[in-house]
Amino acid sequence: DALHEYEAAIVDCEAGDTYGAQHAWDEGWAFYAGSMQSAGATDGNLLYYLAQKRCENYGTCTGDSDGSYESGTAKVNELILEYSTAGLTALATDDCTTTTDYVDKIKVQMKIPLIQGTLRYLYKSDPSGGAGGSKEIAEGWAFAFGILPLLDNADPTVAATVVSNMKTTASSPVTDGYVAVKTAIESTHDALGVTCADIGGLVDSSDSSGVPP
Image 1 (cartoon, helix red, strand yellow):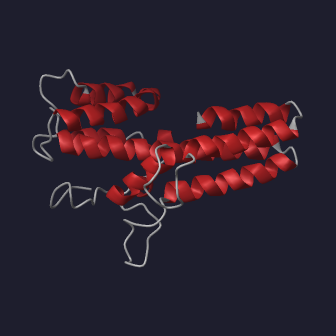
Image 2 (cartoon, rainbow, N blue to C red):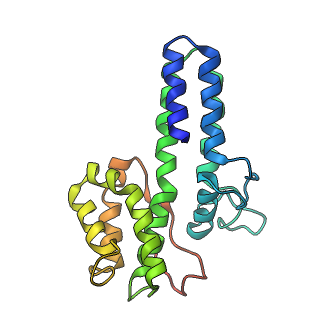
């Protein structure tokens, strides 16, 4: 688990184990990206790969020669690599406080693809939106389950709204409608440390024409 290794590095740092801290920190990035991942590509299996997939859907990649933000490296991945590199440098001088700050920044970035995935499949599950079936509903619930503790901590009412609209056992999907649930999730952005610009808007033309942001 990537976060376990990043946090283990802080424990080792505070114990004065510089080598152990740097080793654990390197493992954090390894668990995040994986051995099959190419930079800026969608050929891996772990969280880096997920961020690449979602940045294409939400226009939150760094951009490429076509002038869009639906290609290139995910901004999330670019920032996590930047923070990981800087944290490793801080560990070399046993600067545990600075490294802890980088862990906190990494945690914020890791939330973004999960929120994007929840919103994407929320839309695809809405009968008045993407009008997907059981596959889309199941994927939406999987993503939602990943952020429910964060939402509940920020606002239990929002978490309850997500559950009632996205759980696989609901009698009908997204009963309150995509916009209402999306607005509820957005109300927690400040508490989660993210912005609407971080999340972007659903722009994947394969979903539907005129997909709402």
